[in-house]
Amino acid sequence: MEINIKNVSMTYPNGKQALKDLTLDLSAPSLIGLLGPNGAGKSTLMKLFVSALLPTSGTICVDGRPLDKSERALKSQLGYLPQDFGLFDELTVTQFLDYMAVLKGLRYPKTAVREVIKAVNLTEKRKSRIRALSGGQRQRVGIAQALLGDPQLLIFDEPTVGLDPEERIHFRNLFSQTAQKRLVLLSTHIIEDVQSVCDRLIVIDRGMILFTGTPAQLIRSASGHVGVFLEHNAAQEHGLHITARVNTGNGVRCRVVADKLPDYVTPEEPTLEDAYLYLLSKEVRQ
Ligand code: ADP
Image (tube, rainbow, N blue to C red; front, top):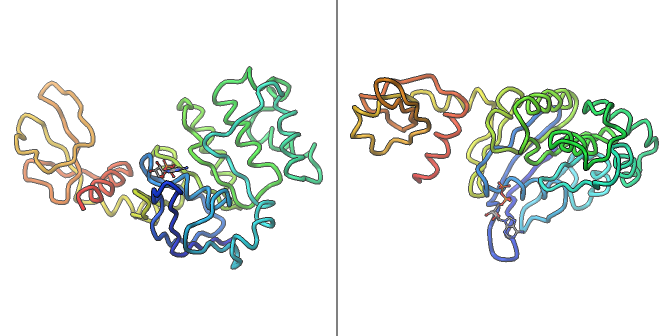
């Protein structure tokens, strides 16, 4: 599967331009992290992929065919977990997924439901009512419905919001397994979600693409722009973007990103988070 986005812009009816002239090429298999601060345009972009919104201008092609002409064919290949996914609290996990399988028109719904319940590790909870599940278990049900029918394109919008660290790790592993043969798009503003599993990152802010490439490339782009200093010797911290402060016996140890590091800053190897923050801080200064 290949998706080509060309010069796509999206303006909401109230005049808010959420995406500005985006051009992107995505192809399977890949686990792509879509990163950006709140309000960057991530959800809008995902809604365009699933045809929940139409772009104001530009084209989206799936395997060479315009999305608006192949929408039906694509729907059968699509699994989508929106940010505000509603579950029916009074149904059991199996009942809910049976219902979703019917909506998706699956030929063997019972087998499909059994398989996705197993994939998200909810077999023991399959007869529990959804209202009795924890936040993480509910998210798993959301992910299970996206996996129904073995779609080739999976889109998860902020899937790990509200989960504890252990649940996050479960999900990351699941996404990574799922992406071995498919195209998986994972939108998040949490760096750790993409750090260990995504082979490609797209960073957007204010509706524009700031970066596309591998996590290693993003890290390299911040090399020489990250360092630490003790706050007491830096009355001149002007112009630095401080990304972390840690109290130590000798003062406050600050981690900074900057175009040019002053002499009193000791350079450090960038992490993915440093590189992401450096990229965003450059954007703010422009
Ligand atoms: P993200 O998912 O990165 O947080 P969104 O795509 O939800 O960002 O939003 C991008 C921008 O578009 C924001 O400024 C948001 O306020 C605006 N926006 C989102 N949905 C609507 C809407 N239905 N009507 C008007 N503006 C919207």
